[in-house]
Image (cartoon, rainbow, N blue to C red):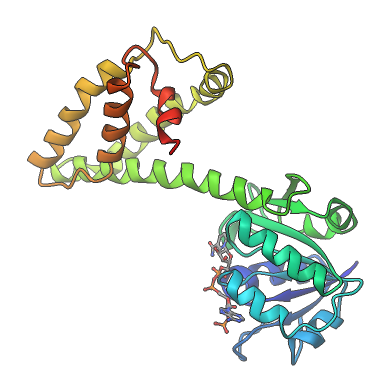
Length: 280
Ligand SMILES: NC(=O)c1ccc[n+]([C@@H]2O[C@H](COP(=O)([O-])OP(=O)(O)OC[C@H]3O[C@@H](n4cnc5c(N)ncnc54)[C@H](OP(=O)(O)O)[C@@H]3O)[C@@H](O)[C@H]2O)c1
């Protein structure tokens, strides 16, 4: 079993440290505010002491400003690997990578595709990028947390894919919440509606690989569902929502993208053409 340090005992940090302890790794923890505990872990009195306790240091803090503040207290990182599982942008990841290199350490950025309850369980995935050598050395320990997928040597790659996946999620949840709001406002049973919505979204999800092919080829012509037809249908969703006393906020950005695409002469194309309209 190996040694690992976890910096940050928020909801996620606690789950990470608990998983390492559970797998039998010698685990040292540090948290800015004292009083947060993880059974079976050693508590370090300072960041420098925590970093000194293991070659693998996993940070999971509220944001990357906090990571920089912690690094300022870390001392030398010679011989250490910092795995930063804090959510942030690709540029922020590259900045943290540069700070770690200045301190003599190696850097791996990570994006956690899970909630704390999923850590060390089925379905949890963590994306990594940065030093492939450091990732390979510590892969077995990191796999304690979740499936580990390396996305490339650019430190920003994990954050990019993390944010892209989460963008998909937020868009999907926006649609789900609007659909529930419509059914509830009309006096429908949201419990009965939930499996219908799940089945419908699952069926629609099957179009994702085909959309990727369209994007790669730049061929958006369709015989399935044209933008011009969707443009005519969108006001129905918006009007019906307003009649139910609902704000159509979730639908309006999609309507704007469709309007722009049709105005630009793409009415015969599929919805996937909207990827081009998202570009600045
Ligand atoms: N929770 C989730 O479902 C989830 C899922 C995926 C990814 N994540 C990511 O994981 C990261 C942590 O999330 P969380 O849910 O654990 O957040 P959290 O419960 O709010 O914990 C935040 C942690 O950051 C520490 N912190 C804040 N400011 C600090 C500073 N200036 N210096 C040192 N430590 C500081 C806090 O320490 P104190 O105790 O001293 O305040 C605490 O340990 C975030 O980037 C989040 O996006 C979370």
